[in-house]
Length: 116
Image 1 (cartoon, rainbow, N blue to C red):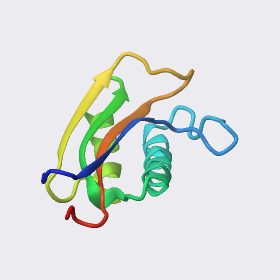
Image 2 (cartoon, helix red, strand yellow):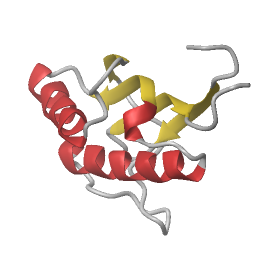
Image 3 (cartoon, rainbow, N blue to C red):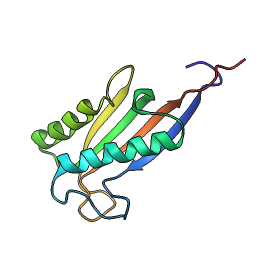
């Protein structure tokens, strides 16, 4: 990245709806979809989008490769993993909200005028 590049560090995109209710209890794929939707909103709020994400950590409750792969499929389908991007997919024992199965942290470039 060039000097003067603005970055957004987004922690904890979680599977909650606008009312703070858990989406997709027991369904990691549905939760991953909600997490991506919420991440899009977080990025939009800082003037960025999925195409400008350069790094992610994807946390999934569980250790079954099939569950982690299913969540990764949602990430890939969203376009989040396209382009120059580093990502880590991590199976964990639990996350912050009761029933939460997926969380994504992200670092994104905030596009704007190039530095003078």
